[in-house]
Image (cartoon, rainbow, N blue to C red; front, side, top):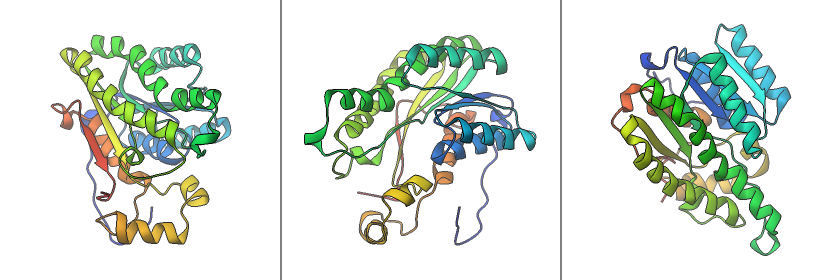
Length: 260
C-alpha cells in the first residue's frame, strides 16, 4: 500500500508452522491477512465465496513457497462451514489461530430492511464467528491453546447511516468476545476483537470513498492525517496471533487513526 516513508515491521517466529485460518480471505482485508500470515511462514487456510479470486491468491502464494489451502465456502451455511474447518485441520493440523474476518456492510435505509435481510445481516456478520469458534476450540484446547481474533467495526462507535443490521452485529461481536474470553481462557485460548477504522480496500475506494468523504475523514474524523490500508490491520492480527500477545484476552484493539 502507498506509504510516505519506509517502515520496518516485526517478524513473529511463533507463527512459523502454526495453522492460521481466515474467513473471507480472497479480497480486501482478508487477502492481506492471508498473505501476511503466509509471509510469516504460518500454514494458512481460508475460505470465500469468490472462488476465482480465492484460487488465484492461493496459487500465487503457493508459487512463492507458502503452505496455503483454499476452499470456496458460504460461511452462512453453518454445517458446511464447520465441516470445512475440520477438513482444513485434517490437512494442515489443528487450527491455532482463528481470524473471523468475513463480513458484508451493504447499506440499506432502516425502513427498507426486511426480516430476511436482517437475518442475512446477522448471519454474515456475527453468527459465523461463534460457530467457527465452537468448531476450533476443542482442537485448540488439545494443542495447548490458541488465539481467536474477531472483527468488529468503527461503525459501532461513530455515526454511520443505513447500516443498522451490520452495526448491531458488530456491536454484538464486542460482547461475544468478552464472553468467549471468559469461557475459553482456562484452556489458554485467547479471544480478542479488532476494531478497524475506515480501511481503504478496493471495495471501499470504488463504492464509498468520495473525495469529500476522504477529506472529512482526514481533516475532521481521524487524529492521524493519513489513510488506513489493509496492511495496518494485518500487523495487529499478526501480533494477536503470535505468542507476543500471550497475556492479552477479552479486549478491543482499535486501529482507526484516532477516530472519535
